Image (cartoon, rainbow, N blue to C red; front, top):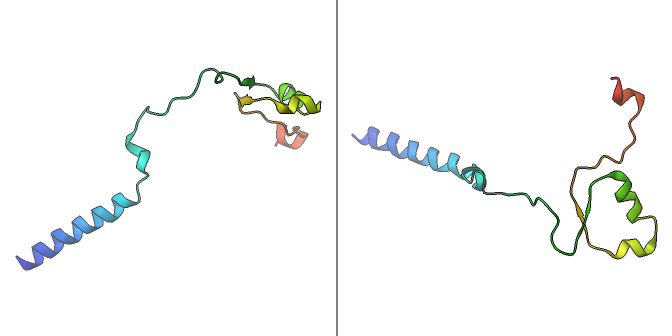
Length: 83
């Protein structure tokens, strides 16, 4: 009986340790929602041209901007296109 109790306690301890390494938000399925449009007072930036236009003039840098897409601003080389 003493050996069975030790094994049970060891399993409980291992389970508790493994559970401690699980990310906290793993059980919150679908609770994170992305905004469909920018918040009030913000300008949506959806293209690389719009992003570059912000830096074109000093006055355009004083706004509130919201990055709506993942924008790749690194030019592709022929090696990246045809590996």
